[in-house]
Amino acid sequence: MKWRWLVLGILITVLAACGKTWHVSENDLPRRTEILDLFEAYFRYLMRPAVQEGNWTMYLRLENKNPPSDLLDRFDRHFHPVKKGSEYVREYINGPTVLHFIRSYEWVSENFVKITGGSYWPGGIGPASGLDVAKPYLWERKDGKWILKSVGVLKHGKWILNYEGVF
Image (cartoon, rainbow, N blue to C red):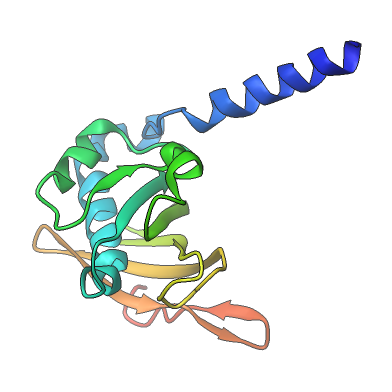
């Protein structure tokens, strides 16, 4: 009988963790708007294949948490519905879906950020159909906009990212 309470406690803990919202680190607080601009550019880049394929629902995760509402609000007029990632588990069977995620991000210089992330396309289209593959993306801030500079390439089992022009 005690094991039931243990299972219930674990389930409640897992469900509570799924609903947490991402917050910018204290070090990056002054750059919060810039970081959200970067995340928006990154997610829009990942959404491009599904835009051409029909009625997909998009879900977003940031470092295994839900994106803040002000980031989700940026997608209000997007062609496809965009929702927080914690809803993905409950709704993924209700039509074509994709989960876009950022596993981590790191400032590599004043104007360059490396994002490690990707997409989960369950049996659908996309570069990682049915797989959760995180790869590196190098972004540059130029004239107030974020531009994708390089996408990691898998060579001999390791992700290689071109840092040319960063340092």
